[in-house]
Length: 462
Ligand code: 4AD
Ligand code: MG
Image 1 (tube, helix red, strand yellow):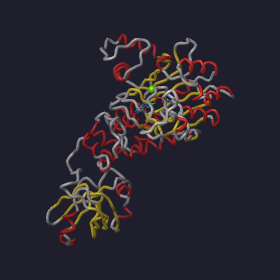
Image 2 (image 1 turned 90 degrees about the vertical axis):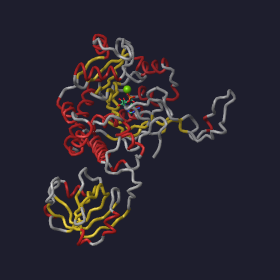
Image 3 (image 1 turned 180 degrees about the horizontal axis):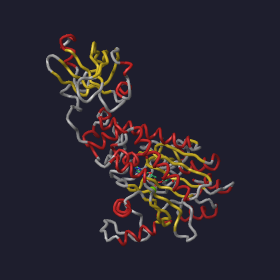
Image 4 (image 1 turned 60 degrees about the vertical axis):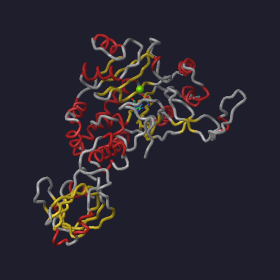
């Protein structure tokens, strides 16, 4: 791997034969000497291959080594005389695995727009930008598991196909094997789902939370980390139809413990990437976001601001700002409001709590005022909402009442209600949108550029 040669000290290999394989980024030179920049994705940097044209004596092969071609190189690792790299390889022999016709290969040297790269998502991982994003994505996933493992959480695999709607938003993708040209119907004309694969209506999950709660009521501290699906028609730079969510769920945690965990977790993840992926971050800072490292360090070093929804509405009303969506107590906050609080008022991440019950999901614990619930949303600069969570309603009667008020069919969640019947306990949890965090950490502007193959309305290619 090229990373092994370019990262750290490889002086023991100096003067020895090495082999590298990868994709050609550029080939330049003259009739005496050729320089090939080779990249295998293991690290952002290319290794320089130097070919002495006369000794190599294979002009025909050299000509076929163009941008995008895949090659294997045997040669001597030497200290580089040129600027920009410590080592280079003097090629003895080269095998071409696959050519890339310069007339047709879309990723020629010149910079491409991110919009264009989205159309060639099958090839964009070969660019510096997507190499950096995908390496960070990997490191972040690893750090998430590490954090929870080190802190006594168990990874619970919650189902992807479900018969319940956790968020109650109704924006779900149906899972069915019914013949769409010949749908079985009941006498009243409605679809007869008893004839469907599972004998009932099923959808792709919008959240693993309800099942994570079952885990917390037995293993104490659990988390899920998996894909979630939302069929809302939101064509924005912050929404995907398929995104990954991390959902810890903790028995005996109240809302303040939940906030402490959310803050500690986010700070850990950002510091982990600052430590492990600095080359990639520096590249992204240079290309896309001059303030990236400053912003990441700021989040690690500063305490998040904590306040209630009600207090936030007061601040927004007093702001004198002209918002597209006017604010008053009871409205759901839009991203323009969230960003005002974070970027213009507090200048730091904000945790809002105690939202009106009417704009939040059925499972949140009701406060004594009977109007607000123990919700929490973490708001980040440039992103807005990055985490949504709450303390859960553990009282069977109160929860049943909310389910009825919100017209949820108790038959869909009978098993969830039983945890409140048998050995109920205070508990809390939250959901962190993985791609929202990726947006923040990479400084990219569009959520479709932080997931390898984005799924969005009218878009399921690759
Ligand atoms: O606020 P949400 O809808 O909360 C839940 O689903 C809870 N069940 C979580 C829990 O308490 N266990 O979603 C959680 C987070 C949001 O804060 C956001 O970061 C992300 O998921 N998210 C999306 N990310 C990308 N595209 C979308 N369409 C998203 N919808 C939510
Ligand atoms: Mg939310």
